[in-house]
Length: 203
Image (cartoon, rainbow, N blue to C red; front, side, top):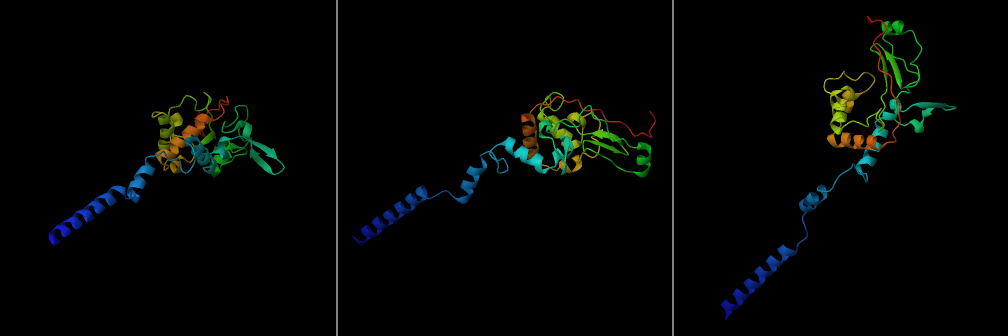
């Protein structure tokens, strides 16, 4: 009888252990795996919203959005957001040869820059065909990672002051979010002028 009781107790304990294993809460590792399977947008509700945030804090508007003068100084012209240097606006009127000799860099609008490399103009980043409307995601990633104009492998290198050597350190997720946002922007037709070589170089 005693052996029977001991055996019965053993069966009861084994059953409790098995039941508890089946009903226990998921471990922290299991929860982490479940959470990581969901899309992550840097804490934002969508990829576009994350990209908009990255563009804002990355200073993209400093050069790529035209300005309007106010009593407090230049402010972003949101009607021309990210449309680049206005096609009809001339570059700074300076003695370029003297500037190049002294290694000076001058800008009056932040959308056009005169320096030892010549003159560079901030690109149109809107979703228009004159901007990045016809770009693929791979073009944008190459433009930032390799500093290639329009993201074309055989194209020229992007000119100063575009800080692509720093921006290339962004993650794939960040670059994809920025591209997603730029593709969602209002299309603004603006053919940005082509860059000019240094004034002291042979024409």
